[in-house]
Image (cartoon, rainbow over all chains, first blue to last red; front, side, top):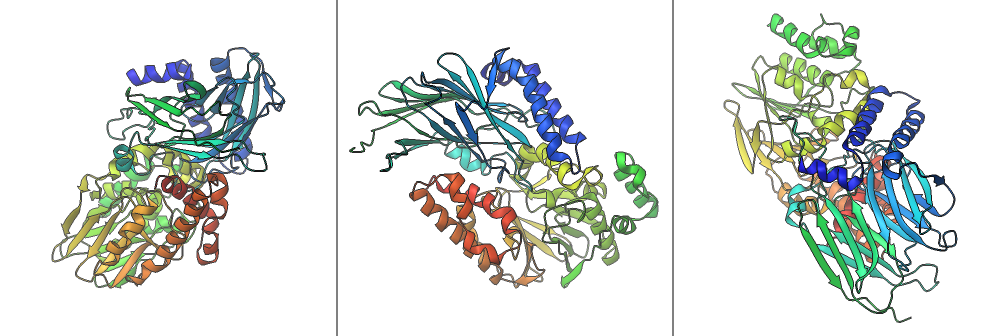
Length: 287
Length: 322
């Protein structure tokens, strides 16, 4: 029960909506077959989104493909548990900056994969992460500008074929190494087309709580990183509220604008209330 | 015996299936399989040891899910089966073939790991009273994936073939090693650390020195990585040290020479790891690295384009932590 409360609060969704989405998903799966599959699932993914967006964004207008935000993912997921996704912000189209980006995977049991808050003047224009994708689905990035406008980009991902599942590959290892972190720093490229980048990696199983034990039919408790923040000298670069659609060993790579030479600080909190902290000196690039 | 079989058929199909209307319920198992277009032949690989060789394809309605290799070992008292196949049709065809070889009961069904092409036939073996044996991690792995497998594979293999398939976990668990006595013949089961999956189990028949390697060994058909690349590479020498003279791989020709059967997959894993490590060191992101890693192996494997990018993706996520 506690987990359910967590989840609904964290997603900003009533539980009923989450379960409605599941029922819809399952209904879609069981009802579809044959050649018209992809067409049908594009439509059914959109239907789920139509039901979902009011729960997440109320009745606010959402502008599609305005150029403020762009999203890229492979057309076909190779490994359902690790699907790379890239979100780009165009600063020229949003001169006042972006407040947050929400990543949605329509058909997943927890469709709101993550909401990223972007620090003021943090200069984040590109964010990569890895997600679980359960079935044919749109992936959507919805950016909120400082002025409160919502801009959306979307891309359709076909589920992986074969036996890859959106589950933890090596559960013993995942539990034994939980909480380890790694930060990689990439200097800006000489061509100046690419800014300084950080890649933050956290070891965590990020387990789903929506899988049932086949014998008892009880839900297996969820256990995932629900909050994460990356700062430089107490100044926010990026924070995330996330869920089980983020892959095992959550992994984020993003560009940013350094302010001074202060340390990079990371804090993550999981659904068991465990807090993981770390910090690293900024690698000065000498430019 | 006939009554018993018929009752099982009725329980196994007619009661559960929406598609039951299509099934000729009065037919025996092999006739039933034939009616579905599956030609199922067991070949003898050693004295009292038999195997079925699956096709090098993805599971589909056309191939009845029969893509992995299955094994049968006949003792003086009982029969053990290694893996149940990718559908109930396939599993029932296997049971029918076993009936032609031996009248002894199938006492054990051993699942070598969690994947659908190896466990989707489990219900047919429960139906005939076999006890299911698996790696200590197998129940947990099936818990996490079972629902997804049933949903995902309904699209892939179709409503008719998925009907009645259940995810049934083992009740005898192998923590490290376990011996199963079939009467005058002892099978040695060994649980491995994460490699192909985190629940890989091998079965060794010491009487004929035949190894059933499950998907720890792929020959000709590209190995799939759903556990740990480093774990697989670390354990490959221990695998090679098993004193077998032949192996029934999880996929590929049956039987094959041992330990030569390991050479090709070891080479592939080493190349994949080398390419991915270089990409990580160069700061190349996952989405780009997986498009080229392992590409020099393309000509050496069936299903390369189906699985290599997936393997590279899993390998990248693992090797990033080295």
